[in-house]
Amino acid sequence: LPAETLKVQRMRDDLKAKNHSSPEKAPEPGFHAKERAFVKPVVNEKTKLPVGTIYLRYDSEKERVFFRRCVSAVLGSLVLASVLGWVLAAKFQKLITEPIFQLLKTAKRVSLDKDYSVRADKLGQDELGHLVDGFNEMLQQIQERDQKLERHREQLEAQVTERTRELTQANSELLAAKERAEDARRLAETANRAKTNFLSFMSHELRTPLTSINGFSEM
Image 1: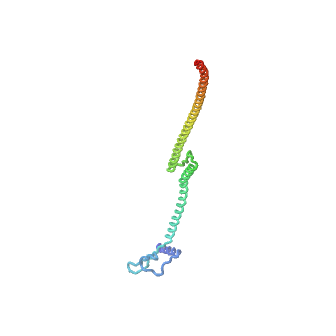
Image 2: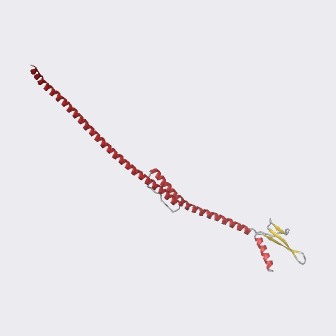
């Protein structure tokens, strides 16, 4: 048999193996979308008589296989992308949330204990690292301010203590001076009374002989 006949025969065998059969009666010439088939009659050029019909039918099995492969590839890509995205998200979430949690922990500790000497741990040189640096710098400034206020308070307490000691000493000196003045006043009063008594006594003693002398002189 010629090669063309053998080729057509093999094609028919393949169609039969795939449960595709040629129509018993050739359909109208042209393209049939429903059957996905193309029909064209073969005419003898000399006699102008039909000698056969060309019937071409599209086999969609390869298309279905290709479609299934595409769907499988897309689903596999989606699953792989989801797993990869989850892994990357977990990794980046730790990189992002861990410094934030540390910062919140430090801020809560400072708020509760009022201890401005603690510092947040810096875990990187990124934007979160700069945020931690700013937070630590703020704590440093607050700590320095509190230290200055504490030193100023201690100086004020020392000044108040010194002024109190000076006032107490001055008060003691005033009380002592007052007591000395009272003692001097009492001594002066005592001396004055003694002087008055002495003058009264001397006046009486002198008046008695003078009276006698006056009496004798009158006689």
